[in-house]
Each structure stands twice: as C-alpha cells, then as structure tokens.
Length: 80
Image (cartoon, rainbow, N blue to C red):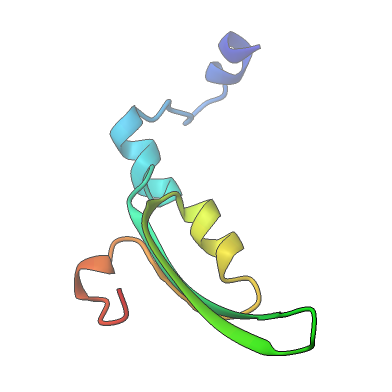
C-alpha cells in the first residue's frame, strides 16, 4: 500500500526529524494543569501537575479541561 501511496504526484515521505516537527516532537512538549479531587468526607484538594518531555498529543489531552501546553515555545514558558 505504501508503494501505491508514494506514486501520488507531489507526495513525499518525511524523515523522522521532519515528522517530529509536524507532530510537535516526540517528548518535546510540556503542560501544566490543575484539577480538584475530593476526599471521602467532601474535602476538596487542588492539585497542579506540571510535566515536560511528553508528546504533543499527550500534552493536549492533559489540558483538555484547562491548563497550559507548549512544544516549540517551551523554552520561554514561564509556567514550566
């Protein structure tokens, strides 16, 4: 099937570095998110999680309910 796909005019196969650039890198992203958990007696606890070195998909998933994420701009992200 790959051979058939490669026959499409104008199509090229990206090398690993190019793929990482498009996908946000493998393990080159970070995120910070805060969530609330409740104890058995109803006491609320706010927990902030910061992680770096994750994929873009994992960072986006982690902040789906709020938070910050970055990939290429992580070097200047004040929240990391």
